[in-house]
Length: 289
Image (cartoon, rainbow, N blue to C red; front, side):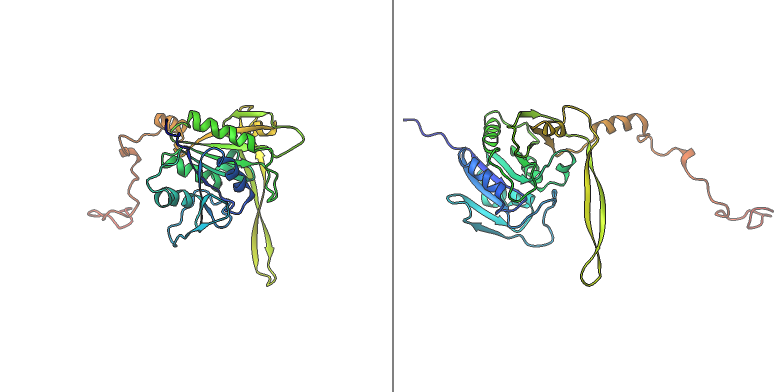
């Protein structure tokens, strides 16, 4: 009788913390697909980006929050969680997939740079592990995740069956629940968008000033192949992301314009300043004779 096929090993993390509803949804889906191990922050780490802990100690404690699931809560960042999971928790066990989320709020466009959710996925990609970051475009703690489970399972099965290109992590954003069903899923590029920010000056009860970051998200991209366009039209957006940040267009442009190989030319060397040389015979110090 043939041996039973091994279940995929799936590592789960997030940035909203181990008690967030989004990660509970992700655990519920992933346990249908394979063996699950959770290593997640013990407190919210949203907006931490790819920060790692180097100046203080890291703590890793077992958690029983998910019945029947091996889980740990970590005092560090999402990237810390993936590092500790790979090198300490799993040791010689290699995950078949790393999934992060489900984040409370969009990580489309430039938000990917600030996202702790995506940093956990990108850290996995750096380690050579296939990875997905899932986000729901609803910032509420009580966000409704009921419409995402079938899609998360379907897309995860695709990743397990067909793989994810080496050196990339998938940034998957899902529209907020509405009266209309999700229209589908699209492979997209990251939209050119940004935050128009301001800092609101406020005062505490002791009249000491402090600042609160505010801003509006502005999409400057009119393309119909972007994540922002897909989400605006009720599609799930899937953007393959890489940790190699080399701007290849700038590299090509600078290679044709910058003069680097021959070094500085003689004409570019600054002339000596007046009075820097010693006066010659019969000359005054100011060089006027």
